[in-house]
Amino acid sequence: MKSSIGMTVTEHILKQQRESPEATGAFTQLISELIVAAKIISREVNKAGIADILGYAGHRNIQDEEVQKLDDFANHTIIQRMSHIGQLCAMASEENADIIHIPANYPKGKYVLIFDPLDGSSNIDVNVSIGTIFGIYRRITEGEEDGTLTDVLQAGHKQVAAGYFIYGSSTMMVYTTGKGVHGFTLFPGIGEFLLSHEDIRIPERGKIFSVNESYYNYWTDGVRRLVDHFKSPDTKPAYTARYIGSLVSDFHRNLLKGGIFMYPADTRDPKKPHGKLRLMCEANPLAFVVKEAGGYASTGEKPILEIEPEELHQRVPLFIGSRKDVELAEKYVQGQA
Ligand code: P6P
Image (cartoon, rainbow, N blue to C red; front, top):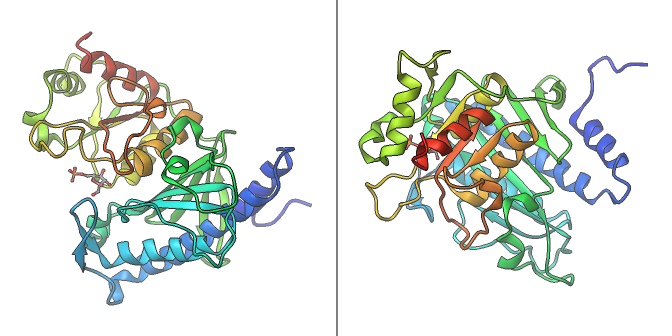
């Protein structure tokens, strides 16, 4: 008999586990615990307006950015919950300078979790949607002991799963294990993520470009000409501009409607010659999701998923979304258009 509430994300994950002969249930346990962490974060985000959890936490992170109280809460929630399940050999967070080891008294596992605990957190106090982004890899070093930086610094195409939680008008989870992209909406009344967007496919070409144009004068000539193209009255069909300033929100809208999100390198800040967004905890997970949905993600020069990472918090220029829009962006960036 068909369930009255539809398919829960747990049922969906178990169904995928049954379809993977080599699956041991370890991955299912890992992602199920991550979902618990996201539900806890969602509750806190949604009550932030009435609790003393808004505002600046009083310190700056590895990115030299002010850490919001909710950032800290989300980061600690994920680390605390995921340390205990015995499925991880190491973690890495956008908020932590170094890799995060599993406490000595807990068993290590065969996976690595990389995450941005609360992306877009500068928008928290103005009630704009924010999100948690995650990517999961298999450990590559042998043994049962602590994972190392070698296990963490893997190219994006090695991910076994990736996705995000978006805390907005509703809380959603979107994820892939390499078998398509699927979206689930949290039903507060029952505390379950229910399948709401099965097999998401991003349109091959969109009508939305998403970029912070205040940096126009700091871009390369190719990027400027690309954005001029999107704005030109001669460009048919016409594009429209949308920019929320919260990566997960801008990405999620484009995933469902089509379009391109861009955070190009800018020449203004010699400390950030490759732009602001991080390869490991932002670009790689979303690049895996968009690829599985039929889209594409590039630095403008090469596919995001093929980058061999050199350091944990390295930044990359990001052009991500509808395949034809991102391929056009590459042509402009490379001076071929
Ligand atoms: P800018 C939020 O701080 C964030 O990391 C992403 O979520 C977002 O896409 C980007 O920065 C916005 O940056 O420079 O446009 O404010």
